[in-house]
Length: 113
Length: 114
Image 1 (cartoon, chains in turn orange, yellow):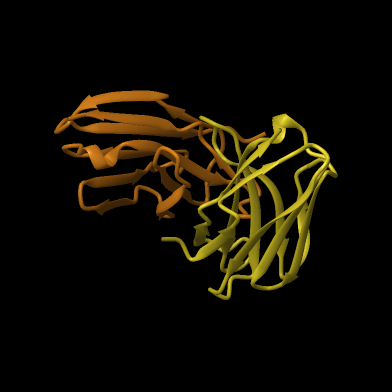
Image 2 (cartoon, one colour):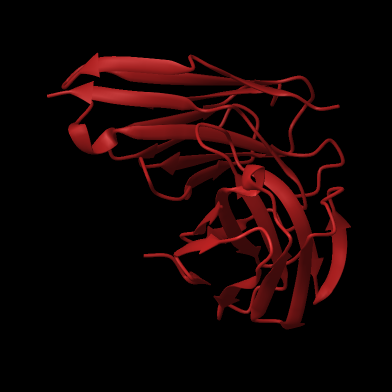
């Protein structure tokens, strides 16, 4: 079945440093979504990427979708303590339907002030 | 704040109890989902309702029984649960089943089975 691999599993940074998490799918994705979950919280939808090679920015966050639509990344510039949480990527199942999302295992980001 | 409302936020129940989790959305979304999330793990899909009909059951044990009374409401009835069922239960919705743009997760119900 479809697998979505996400690395690293953990990342600890000093405040102000950059952070990147990577997501790779075993199959081509029709789209990829990113979520953030604060400790003790629930997943919050950040963005969806649809087009090959797409790059989207949200303030200090930059999201990329690979040309082959099998990989994606989330980059945070100059991390802040408010960035702490687990970042998940998720892609629809191989049928292309968003009925079922396959989530990566997530990257837990901690930020030292 | 999320536009998908879940109640209760926390629930402690015994293994012989019957309880229900509730989810409500007023965005006009026609697909609703139940996910289960264990600590330090990603959400796992349990059920999908499409236009108020159950369309996907991810081989969930029968002690979990979903119900969709109308297009805005989704319930999850719990009976004879096990301690390993303790988890965060998340409801989510999307505009239409299979729509390319996702909706939102509710804030979840933290369930503890004792």
